[in-house]
Image (cartoon, rainbow, N blue to C red; front, side, top):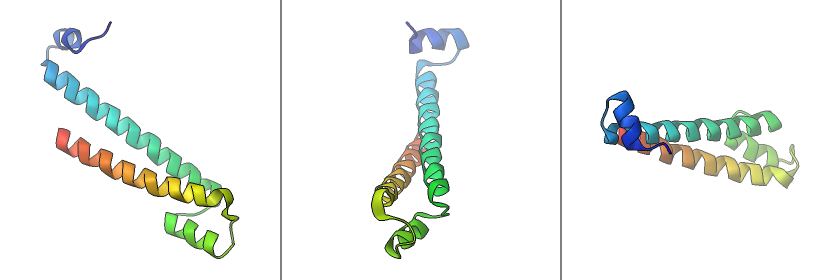
Length: 92
């Protein structure tokens, strides 16, 4: 089993540093995954922003289903990314 203690001993840094760096790496990976999800939505609807997607739905240029759900996902992913970035900054 991999433990912070074992990794700490192997690389010669404190357990706290191992855990902090691991958490930051995890958060940065989550950010990249959420950004990739947003990129997929952008590509699916050929839009650059969630506001552009909203306007396209509202003006009926894009069918509302499932675009509304994707718009909500986009908004939530942006909030999630902002929260994760805040945690990364706190961890550094």
